[in-house]
Length: 384
Ligand SMILES: *Cc1c(COP(=O)(O)O)cnc(C)c1O
Image (cartoon, rainbow, N blue to C red; front, side, top):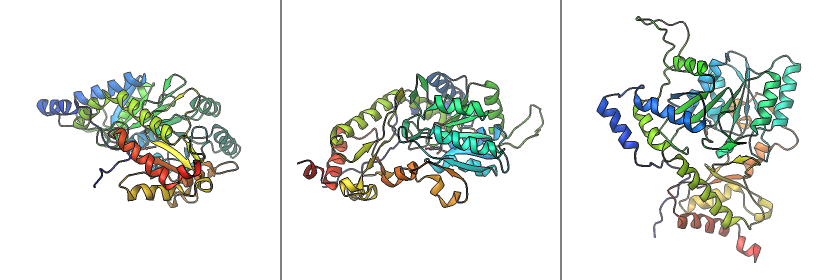
């Protein structure tokens, strides 16, 4: 009996994407400008309640633009969450700046406000305050942005919110991505909505987004001839891809409901197992559950996260470890890392697992994942 492969998170079209893509063909706006780009930006602005947005070709590009606009350059310091995908910090290196990594707290799995403050204090005494802090909102949940904003304001350091994984998450009544000077979204193939590849940089400061647009289009000055005074990039989103984005925005809320329902089913099927620690949903926080994540206590359950991932893989199911923290990556060897007592991001990496969270999964398929997990940790024997 062959069973369908169960994926971690794959593109899930709503239906209208093709209509908007066709529109681009019909009007011949096969370019990184056009109605789809404008409409997609408008949808993001309305959905998140932000004043300005610029669609770009990737989330990584959006972070690069944000850092550049904040004047980050050679040997500047930029703080960044350690527990994240490499794309959060790669643009720091593009600019020749130096990343400093900050550990997570266990309540949100995101940047610890206490450790951030300690790191700021340390760098202030050495008169080397960072040019920016990149705060990552992991797997669909916001960091404690009110505290982080308060701390950064006190030190006068701007925030870039890497909300690539948290579009639609809410923190204290506000949309994830709208707390920093800049917010960044990604529409890569595995994200909650996708344009096949794409990103967005947002801000309440319209002037900054105007500057982002200029930088994303080779920093061309207003002149009939080609006039350039600053370095620029070719980062604009294609009008074809933006058409996919327009259709995807129409189903974003449905996808969030589906993602949360998947998580609820995992809790229903595994919540009785002592030794499994689901990623918490913090107070005043609405988690999209882009990925359902949990930790596995190897001493209680006799299996490591890695062994569980292997067991699921043998059964044609895609699960993944939690991001390997950037301070553990050879690429970033030699850069500072701040943590206190237990290294939480290392702990989450070594014990964490992201379960299949594909919105195209059936209830039966989720049950199959649960059954196989219980089998691997002998849950029914332990509980009997
Ligand atoms: C996906 C992702 C990015 C990068 O987005 P791309 O569109 O793939 O360039 C950045 N940060 C985090 C946390 C991500 O998960």
